[in-house]
Image (cartoon, rainbow, N blue to C red; front, side):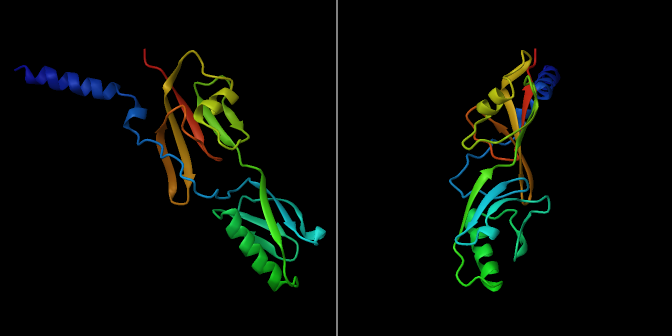
Length: 183
């Protein structure tokens, strides 16, 4: 029976397959609007209201706290959605026609682990790729499998774990993992 050795060979090759090859590919980032998350810092300007303007950080609970309006949900909102919420809240609390502008001044960090020289948490930079993240972390170690990288991306319905290429875009809050190469 020559079938059994062939089956054993196929099973052993499958067992040696990298875990990255069994993951779905990281979706290419559509041009969706940026969604705010815990740790982002926003510059909020209310025209002619200096006491209400300044930098505000999205709390661990996903809110920002402003004078006159209190805690406003920000987690998962786009800048435009949050601007509309703030405008509505300010109108309801004594400002006749508020003119509100928002900008992200500091994004929440990304994390990189595995076979990089300096794993850890780093500030996010817009348009960052996996290769840029690796460079920020000091580059690949000599044991790194430079083509076996995964990204864990938090989302509102759990986390997505996917394989990534060097040119894949990462987002704030992503966890990048560089695997060890198989000898």
